[in-house]
Length: 182
Image (cartoon, rainbow, N blue to C red; front, top):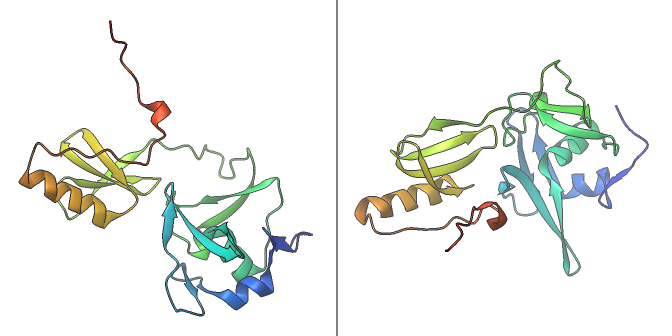
């Protein structure tokens, strides 16, 4: 399905195809010039930053995948969901295009978050967002990050010195409750 729109944030299919290659089976996007895997994450999703002059334009990796594979530009009323709920899985058969507000499978896409244990004790992957949590105790999430390696590093520091504490930077500080001083 090709829409009337012919560009995404000013980039045409031809421009994106000249900069990136996409493997629909693995879901990986590579920079053609450097050969580097495009794997930067923000808020649990993959994104691509392209410098245009002095400005960096942020593109959704899922949208770039759709453009490269199907020459499909989303309309304003459309959005992307992931069949398995994993925003980091860019395999073409995992990317769903739905109308904003529509739930295309007859059920809501809002899922309760759940944790999946990793091979490192005290480090868990939180789904469906895909970020990592380093925990001191079984239910205590004390450090969140999009990087597994960073979560492992923090957890190992805690094992060596239980007095160390780090604040993560993934949550807007306005959501942290403040106790009234009396």
